[in-house]
Image 1 (tube, rainbow, N blue to C red):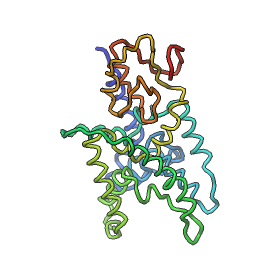
Image 2 (cartoon, one colour):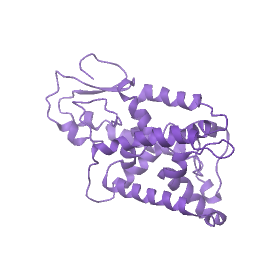
Image 3 (cartoon, rainbow, N blue to C red):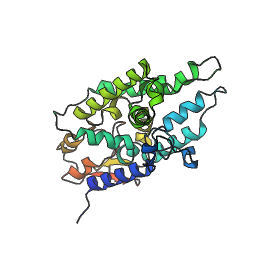
Length: 283
């Protein structure tokens, strides 16, 4: 039996999800894993406060360090993300991000499927600059400590994986629910509805981690090349791309998650994905 690229990707996504959330028994206990592995960041978006989570969330870790009273720069987290981005680009999003898998499962719910206006893709970069980089440093309390603004005010992954799961096992937490949780719950509901109609709605419009990896797509070592001698400009690759990219015109778009559907669909095998440059195309 031949394993297609789509099946391979799905198996890797499931394996990565399980590895990232290996402490399933903690859901029933209502506690978090706080062992030594939590000192390391997950390459994809996965909430630190999820009871099953084995690693820290890179966006949360970045905010926690920059928002400290000493205004430290998170060299470890930033270097970690830059290294992954330069090596893989948004391959991380397409193959191993836990919340990416959740979105794809939700998108399978029968419904009309829509496309997001491309202007909305810029919102995730605004969120990255304002809520992840600036607010933890600027919006400080009386002790000089900043808030993890993205995690606190926006992140639907945190609400789903951490907030709701902990509320179900901790009655005392339910007594403290206020307007802030209502705001985050509303963002979660809108995100989940968006994912039903729009493929990876959160990735396209909200995710600051995807924004970081996307900025590195054009220079990442893992890349897409179009063999101009073979390409017939049939447009099939653009039609199958669920991230609304035209690989023939912009093979290393910031929105491309390297899922490989374009290469699978190309009748002339003109699309190549990998680390080695073939010198047969423009990128």
